[in-house]
Image (cartoon, rainbow, N blue to C red; front, side, top):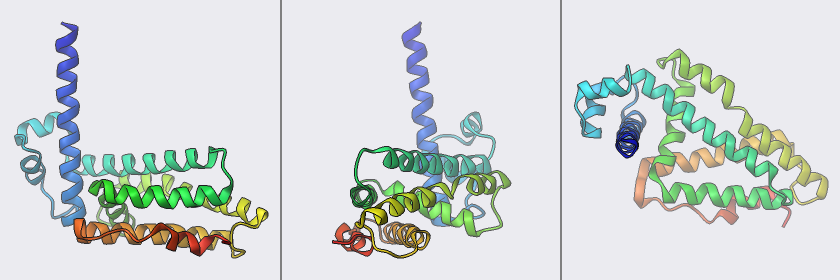
Length: 201
């Protein structure tokens, strides 16, 4: 009985993951308004009736994807800041891991595209707007603090740390958008190029 319960839960989790992954691709490439719940169910390979067993609406899925993306990004930033490494190594590591992530998983770049759409568009669920409003500043704040520590040590260039943090994330997001647009044909640049903007090396 316990094994059957575990198996059922595994099937549910896999279906939900398939729904979210399919919805992510559709939202990123078509936008929320042009994506129908039937598009998501077809892409996920499940019936529309079964779709409603997992979610109430496409807006609910959209908000869940935004929350998932920001939660993961914020958690990664917090862990980065906690690492027992000097600031310049944290910056180098962050750049390397982010660029590797774009090449390793196509969904990663789609999440950045989705967040950008949600940030600039008025035609998105209020819940998604609130999630972005509450959770989008932390990555900038963490990188800014790391840069300030590096400037104290003389390993980070002596520009305004807030401006440098904006350049950091703008560069990362720009690369993500290129990856989303061009897919497998787009290769991430050498991370040392981006690191050179910030490091005194």
